[in-house]
Length: 161
Image 1 (cartoon, rainbow, N blue to C red):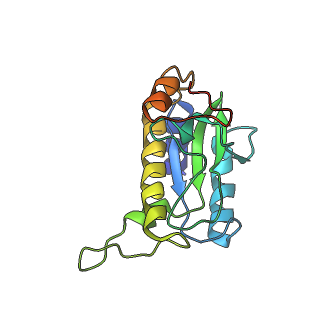
Image 2 (cartoon, rainbow, N blue to C red):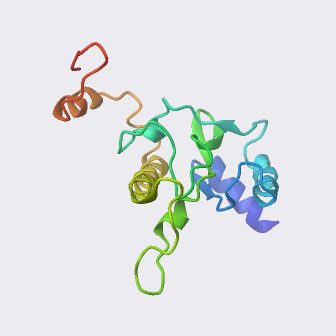
């Protein structure tokens, strides 16, 4: 009980908790139990999917969705407190992406996308870390037009922001 009180205090004082599930499903027994245990940390909240427009997907890398070693869910789930993601849940096994085997190579395959998926999982992990450290300081996205211009990005109608 003391650990849950300390975790609750950490979350309520502005901390962010990232929970990563290696189960390979959205409704696995371990994940369901964990979600129920974490729910009291954010009073009167429910788990919600984090939409693709949220700053967590572009606070460092510009991503359209959540990635991981597995491709189970396209979004994070989260508990919000006062508009910030206080508890973030990944269904896609982010940490499994980083695991190394005895010879130093990657220990687990990225399924179904292989090594390109691993790169996107690394980027998703960095975005989650940056969000936890900086919250939503980039939510105004004043920098985005310049980044897209440097990348020669064009919208469907050919306009370069």
